[in-house]
Every structure is written in C-alpha cells, then in structure tokens.
Length: 507
Image 1 (cartoon, rainbow, N blue to C red):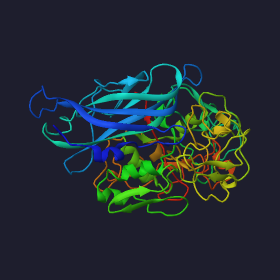
Image 2: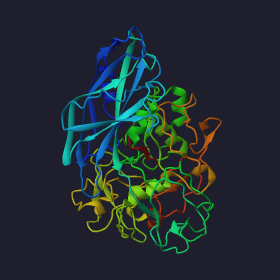
Image 3: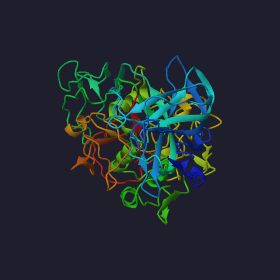
C-alpha cells in the first residue's frame, strides 16, 4: 500500500466533534498509516495496516460509584482510494493499541454485536476508547493505533489511499432496572396499569405486554401518544441492556464533516439548506462549511438523522432508552426534567461569544434550578444553543444547573427535539436495534433493515419515529422526561426545532 501524504487532509480529519466545547475539546491529530502487513500474500483479504493518531479531550471521567459509568470516544475511520468516494474502514476486533498517556481501554464495536467477529461479514466499524480506571480530568493518548483490515475492504496492497479519523463523544449507560413514567401529569406518560401515578419498571429486555390488565405497561390516549397497543417485542431495545449515547446533540460541524464525505448526489439529498434560527451550513464548490460549528444542528429530519447514524456505524435511540438515559436508576420524581428535579430556569438568557467555541450564557444563568433552552429562556436568541453550554458556565453547581442527565448526557431536556423510535405504533415496535454499516444508499439514504421509515430498502419516511425532550420554542412542560405529547407524531419535515443524537449497544 502506498501511503499518500495526508497533510492536506489533517485539518479535515482533526475531529468530528460531538460538542467540541470549551469544556471538552475532543481532538484527533497526527494521523498517519503505518505498519503495513502483507504476510498473507499479495492483495490477500487478510492484509492489514495500522491507522495511528493522537486523541484527547477535557473533563473525562470514570467512576465505580453511582452512576457507575464513564465517557468515551467512538472512533471510526473513513478512507478513499485515489480520488474515489469515501468508504468506511473495516477494523479488526483485536490488535489495537492505546499508545501512551492516559491508561485506556479499547473495545471494538462490531457490525452485529454479540456475534462472532468476521473480517468481511461482521467487522468492527469503530472502537470505544475510554479510561481504564477511575479518574477525572484531561484524557490524552499519543500514538494510538487501530488495525484496519484493508484487504477485507478490497483495497490493493499498492493502492494510494487517504484516511480520515473521526471521534464522537459518547457516554456509557450501564445495564440495569429503571422506570418509565414519573407518576406526574405529563401527556401520555407511561404507567403501570391501573394507577397512572405508578411508574412502570423495566427489568429486562424481554417482551413487554401493553394493555389494561393490572401490572401491564400502559399510557393514556392523546393525539400523538400512540395506539396503546403491543406487545413491545423482545428484540426492541428497551434500555435495560448497556448502551452508549451521544453526549451531545449533533453539532453543525459534525453534520458538515458528514456531508463532506458523501458523494455530491448523497450530500445534496442530506443538505438541509436552511439559513434561519442559527442554522448556518452552506455549500461552495461542493464543500460544506458552517459559521456556527459548535451550535446544535437543527433542521434535521428523521431521514437525515438516520443517514448520519448509518454512516457513523451507530443507530437511532428508542424512547425507552431516552428515559433511561435521562433518569438512570433513580426513583422517578413527578414531572421531572432530565436533571432530576421538577424546576427549571425562568428568565430569558443572553449570550456572550456568540457562535464561538466558548459561547456562553451572559445573563440569567440559574444557580439553583435546571438550565435549559425553551420558550422563556430562549428569549431573543431564536434558535438552539452551543452544545454543552450550561456545563461550561463558571457558575455551574453540578448536575442540576448543568442541565445534565443522571449519566452526564447533555441537553436531553430542551434545545432541540430528540427524534426517537416510538413504541406507539407497530412500525416503531418492529425496530430491532440493528446498527448502521457505515454506508448509505446511492441516493444518500440509510438502508438498514427494520429502521423506521424504511421503504423499498431506503429510509425515505418517518413512520415509527417520534419526538421526545422538547425544544427551544416549546413551553417547559414539553421538556419533561416522561412527556409523550409527540412520542408517536410522525414528521418527515426538516424543521427549525429538531435535531438528532444516536446510540450504540455496548460491546
């Protein structure tokens, strides 16, 4: 394999930042290809090389006490041969190295987790990199290496290749029992029949009966709450099993990096082409860019989010996983928000350092209640905020004022609607949790089996999806963890108040 000079691409490959904010600054640098191994024979599918890079981010953690979790980077590789299209690199399940620096663990994320690795039919689509031991502070490793089975990708030994390495901040959500519904007054909230004030506990990944027999999962009827039917099949991801969730909603720079690895036809399909409400992604000469790189990316349809998830080797989140990611293992608080209380800031924010990496709240940041972007606090801002903005404030007192979930996931209440797979109709309930394979259809659509909106092999609709968590234009009640007012509300549109975040089952 001839290693093409990648200096020109280093800037592009620096990062796919999942909220590259002043607090965290995830960064990939010094990317190169090394250690080519051709001992299997000329152009043999078993031949491999090592993709080397440095990785760092700030305010990393791992704790063996509650919430018993850690943050991680989901790292994956894209390549192109000559001037061809960008492709997803198939990695080995072993043979990776975390280099030097912070003691780190690397877990391979297979195309089909829980089944045997195979270089071509079940490769690793990326890896999770995280602390090996309890600790907090900056995470930094130098000379990390991922084993890329380029022969399995069909790349010739003497090919000239370009490589990009992407890293997305994720948060580990451990396995365990949890509740859905809070016992409050949220629209169409889950409860254990027959008492609406009794939350329903999920204790495994087995099928869940939905109905009007004592002890069943149920929810009141509403316009977009769902069909009140079931069962929720065993294969539907319920949140009991461990999974990783994106720490932040997709940022505009993340979406730009996604668009810039697609063909022109694919990118045209996936380009929102909006210029209002702080959305600032533009295209010139076939290259996409944004002047609001750190702001959460709005105007994303279900189809856009599904395509991004497929491209990154991730998958959509279910609404049950949404409640687990917010509430964790805690006993529900009636009408609670993602930070675990039923109170929220009530004065309009003003911004400082607009659109910069350190965009922050200049006034009316609450030091006693949860901070979130919704109709009152958004004031004259008229759009979503920088991802992670509340945690980075100098007056932050902890989880509540940071607006963080039990596990440290940000902006699950407010900022942008979370598009999630619903249990409120049969199409949503058919979702089996299949992960993306890193490749889209020729037209730029996700094309994974049983994903909501799949028609003729492509995700071109949104039936089976819904909305959770509220947005910057909603009233505060829509931000509540258990509010299901739009949980089965199918929307195929790109709107000013919708974003996306993806998940992946833990290896």
